[in-house]
Every structure is written in C-alpha cells, then in structure tokens.
Image (cartoon, one colour):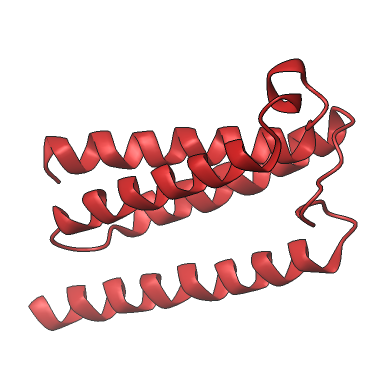
Amino acid sequence: MSKTSTISGIIALLLLTILIVLDFFPQWAFAEGMGDTMFWVLLIAMAISIVISGRHQKGHHFKESLFIFIYLIGLILLLTALGGDSVRGFSPDQTGFWVIIFIGIIEVYAQWKRRSAGKHAEK
C-alpha cells in the first residue's frame, strides 16, 4: 500500500470517527453551531479521502477491513455506553445497527473466502 493510500485511509477513518461522535453527541458546543452543515462537509471530505485511498490501492486487504469493522462497532458500543444517543440510527437498540452489522459480517466473510481461494490458487 502506498504512503498516499495509507494517509488517505487514516484521514477517512478519523473523519468517520468524528461523524459518529457528532451523531451520538450533537449537543457538544462545537457541534451545535455547525449542525447538518458540519455533517455533510465531513461526509464529503471522507468520501473524497476514500476515493483517493482506493485509487492507490492495488488489492483490498482483509485485515484492514476486519480492523475497521471491529473498530466502528466498538466505537458505537462505547459511545452508547457513555450515554450517547445516535440521531441517525446507529445505536444497538435500533434495527439499522443490526442490519449494518449483518451486512458487515457477510462482507468480511466474503473477503476472507476470496483471500482463501486466492491463496489456494497460488499453490
């Protein structure tokens, strides 16, 4: 993975973390003044960062996907435990959260199968 791809991926993950924290705690002083504008600016910046990261990436890495999936689930569970309440439906007591987890598990499993099949083909 190139240095540009790594930096873009880290920036995208940081922006996503900020978006999720703002979703759980919109009452924070710096979030109140920005509102939905801040959400959309961060979302667009994150999308651009992901595109730049993906452009320089030769193959999709299973370990990175698994780390990001576990990180995001852990972050959401932590923010819920800290008393946050998701405005957009990402808390464990809402159906959308479980749908996202189910889709994420299927995607990680599919990547693992592709990776396993690729290793067996090389032998």
